[in-house]
Image 1: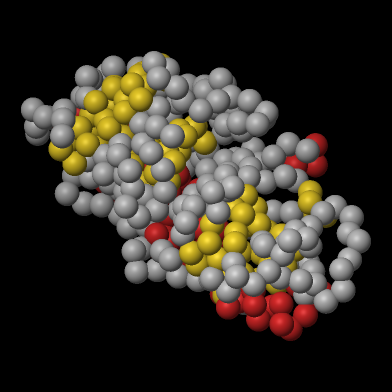
Image 2 (image 1 turned 90 degrees about the vertical axis):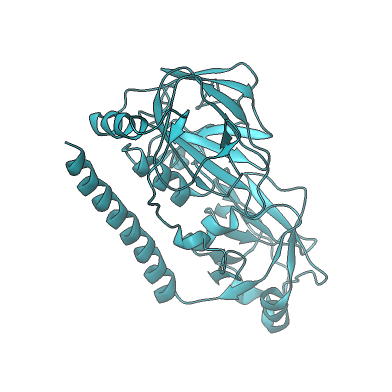
Length: 337
């Protein structure tokens, strides 16, 4: 089984949850910018939630399926269509051979995830299918997709095959989907652009009271000089440390907020470096880092300080939510037999 890329979009890559366990060797984690959306897409097609899927950024691709398959689309709504008909999101969708799936531009958010039953049959590099563009490793030949690429697919589970067959048996169209769907709590429209919550970084106390107030009251705009490595921000009030420090490089994580000498923060994202030498004023919480990944250049937001307890509560809530979805899908799978 395979799908053929007719138009690649702006930046479409294969990502999973990342290359875990190699940072001590200087190898970046990479992985999906919005891992919750990726995991949900995989669950909906009965894959392991860490299976590789397509991460679609800002301008979507067009592709044709060479055989029947089961897919799911999550994350930002790129208004996907087949035969001019809207393809519903956040649910399994059975597609027929010859179906042309087209993504457009999103109105809200900037990254969508397309999972296919069986995943993508690409080499596993250091236990991951994630594409890291700068080193040209992982994914499909270590690069973003291009026109005429042919992506081979893995073997779907028996449940995925049965679900696909049942859905297609009720229509003559090129695709079919159930009338139910699941929500994405971290991307609900009413809170998508809520302030990004942070905890104090390693050098938080070195910035002084006025700089901290500015950090938590400024509106920050994501600049065009932003990518999967980091979001460079811009505001009217640069941040200054009370006493400039000579620093040695320290470990950083996804969501670490650095402040370079010019005073405009950088939020490190999926392809962030393993160590960095700029002071760390804050750390965005895990749930909000995934939400921040849906912000695009030109979007404006504020930071908000939170507590360790709230960060842990929200992390556990969304993990429980995914487990509940997986259990519900397993129950539906039993009904298919």
